[in-house]
Structure formats: C-alpha cells, structure tokens
Image 1 (tube, rainbow, N blue to C red):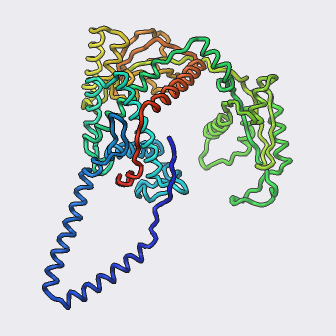
Image 2: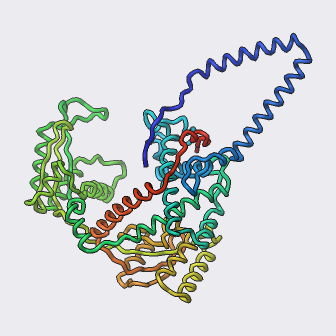
Image 3: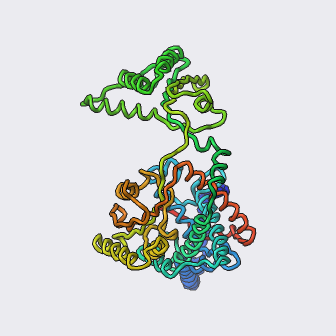
Length: 507
C-alpha cells in the first residue's frame, strides 16, 4: 500500500480573521441603532435564513446524501462512492487502533484530534496516509471484482446471508459521518467478492516437486536459519564521568576482557552459565526480593540472549555463522568502535531449513454474540456438523457451509480454510485439536475457545515448513503476475481530489 504525502493543515490567520469579524459586528451594531426597528426586523429574517442554512448543511452532512452521490473510484461495472470510501478509510483507522492500542502515541497518533490536523510525516497527514492506503485497497477490490465477473464468480446466497448476519450488530456510524447500513453493506459486498476471487486464484496455483526444489535451491539463504546466543558489552570513552543514576561506565579494556571470557565458553551450557553468573553479580536486589525472584529474572535475561539468526549479506555475524567451516559451539567477538560495543555470539545450531510440520484446517465459527448465548451457539455448531454428515460429507460441502455460516471473517470466504498452520500459532484448544497425534484426513469435531464454538475439519494436508514457505512464495509470484494482467485488462479511475469531502476521523 502506497504512502502519498502532503503537509499538515495550518491554522495561521485565524486570530486575525476573528478580530476582523468582531470589528465588523461592532460596526453593524452601530448601524442597527441608527436605522432602528426596520433593520432589526431585517436582521431577524437574515439571521433566521443563516440558521436555516446551517441546519440544512448539518442535516445533509449527517445524512451522507452528498457523499453518497460522489464517486471516489470506478471501473467498468463497479463504483466506490464517498460513503463506501469512508468505510474503507475508517476500517484502516480502526485496524490501527486495535493493533497498537495504548502504543498509538508512539506513532504520533492522537485519537481525540482530527486526523486531518495530525502529521503522519513531514508532508502528509494521518488522514491522507489512511486515505491513500484505503484507495489502494479500493483499486484492488474493483480490479478483482471485474475479474471475478469475467470468470463467472459471484457471492453465493449463503455467503451474502452470512455477510448480512455479520453486519447486524455493527453500528454503521462508526465507519464515518453519514454512513448508513446500506453503505456499509455495499462496501463489504465489493470487498467480499474481491477476497473470494483472490482466494480462488491462490488456491488454484499448484507446483511440481521439481519447481519447488528449484525455487528452494535458487533462494537457499531465504530458507535457512540458526540459533545463537548473543550478548553485547558497552564501554565508554570517559568511564569516570558519572551517569544520571550516579554510576560510572565500563572502559574498553574491561569490556574486551569480559567479552574474551564469555567467548572462551564454547559450549551452550557453559555460555549460558557464564551469563547467569554475570547477571547475578550485576543485579541490584530489590526490597522483599526472594531467591526465586532473582533466579526467574536471571533466566529471563539469559533467554533474551537467544536469537534466531537469518542470513544478511554483508552482516559480519551472519557471514561468520553461515560460512562453510562454521561449527556449533563456536563463538565470535565483534567490536563496533562507533557504537563502542563488543558483541559475543555463540552458534548454538548450524543453519538449517525448517522441517516442522504445518497443517491445513477448515473450521466454522459460531459466536455467542451472533446467537445470543453459549448454548445457542453450541446447538448451531452441532446442527451444522450433523447437516454435513447427513449430506455429501466432503471437504467441498464443509467449505460451502463455512461460507454460509462461519463468523470468522478471515476464513469464511475461503471455505473456512487456514493453510500452513504452525504448531502454537492458534489458541490452545484449536491448536491441540489440529496437532493431535491421532488426527487423520476427514476428521471432524467441535471445540470451544474464547471466540466461540468451532466445527473443525482436518484436510489431511501436512507440509514441512520450508516447503510451505516455498509454495507461499511461488503463489505470491503467480498472483502478482495474474494481478498485473488483470490490472491491464481493467481500468480503474480514481478521483483523489474528492477525498477531502470525507469527514475527518476522531476517536
């Protein structure tokens, strides 16, 4: 998603304008006193008309009529209206708020102030940044929707009904001033069709073993990683100078000596034990701290030194770890004179590809929010599983049910499918069901998580991590090529000069 840039809105001149208006008002009062009642009556009429216009403008703003009639982007057969674009922009904003929460201030984002008045960068406001990102999404939706129509793909009645059910308890006004339920529905219908067609494309790409092996060999370093332990000693040019906390720093000689001591520990256990002793010696005990507390803190510090190292060309430590003669247990000391540091690294394992097993899963999520209670959600889950068993009982029929009933917006338009699930990736109950050692293709079941009740289906597809990575990369390449062709076949016209009509966002 691109990042167009503009400048922060300025407030210069407002004070002067206010003074000018005050002077004009004083002059009008003088004229009214001279002219008398006739002017007073005229003033009342004028005032009434101004108030009436203000009320009218306010009503039109909150009705969304003008924004709804404004086209922000369009293709041959589809349009994105102002209210639909407002949905996309506000969705981007809500994602930021949800993702970063209390840390938004670190991004310079104040949810209580208009985004049109907050700088995202030197020459772009937050509103402009989010609008640009929403525009990029909208263009993709239009191109994919046109391509879906070319391929004869549309949303099924079940998918539309599921979408409508998901929107029932959503307040459309949270997506912008003037946005109503139909605006929200239109925006989500276009987005859903685009997502469905993208899923169809992604799932349709297949690769031979030779193609996967070839990609792996050509991009070998992208697949390799190794485990290391690394600790950095910092020294100071003038160590005798006290810091704010009254402590003096370490000399270069002291740091180098400690680095040499640690580097002499050429086994993982010895390396970690040296770190434990060092952390304990340098620890400042707190009031009421127990030995168990200290041991826990020290172990946390040691664990923080463990890192997964991937290859980066030109990086000294990576070049050392990935060299042909590298051996597990070796150590490496790197001095950075500019940063005044000595970094000691132990190679805990040699570079290797990920052989851990990933699995493909389908599920249907039934939530208490949609069904009113746990009992009702569980009953619906049992009803759907029985319906599937009484029918074709195939993976395709399960996928169709997921599209019609699952409340999981991340997978419902993909038949409830999650590919390449890694152990530990999902919440506990979901994870445990997926990675049960007795699991076999076609297994079904119902589990409960904090999200609700899940009707589960095990596809039986198990893929090594490195191969899943290769297939994902090849899929991305194939999709990018297809998307470029679709973009050439379908023209999207964007009216960026109209974006300022979208009301600003505040928290």
